[in-house]
Amino acid sequence: MINKKIAIAVTGASGAIYAQVLLNKLAKIDGLELALVMSDNAKDVWKYELENEDYKNLSIKEYSVKDYFAPFASGSSTFEALVICPCSMGTLGRIANGMSDSLITRAADVMLKERRKLICVVRDTPYNLIHIENMQKVTLAGGIICPASPSFYSLPKTFEELAATVVDRVIGLLDIKIDTYRWKE
Image (tube, rainbow, N blue to C red; front, side):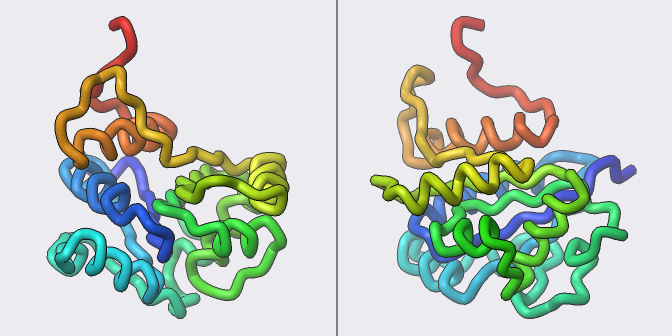
């Protein structure tokens, strides 16, 4: 039984490992219907950083970045969340300024206008004032900015475990309960 529909978007920002860990974790959770959209740059960055194309092997329905007929491109769909992981500053800027020039930015616009969950896992550093102002705009519009800033208090031993410290926070923001490290619990 499906009880949550979640769209995942991957942009060309560095940090493909975050997307990989997120997709792998979500794919193992029962009751989720997942949809995936990746920019062309995201596919290039994934292949460069992870030295694979494992996103092609996921059993998740993938949509073209140009497919405005994807269900989550409309407010009448029942998709309740969009996670953009990682979220490039260019994508964030287009969302903050209402420019729906791809399925990713259109879906983000839908989430904001319908008051549904939009989580942008930004990965750039340092931030300039334009980045900060765009994060403020998206936050004021109802989105969640979740910087890809890993934590270390769980003593992660691998890159995947380190990325999971961010991904587990994202999954928690989706109101999905998972077994994960909790500070002092």
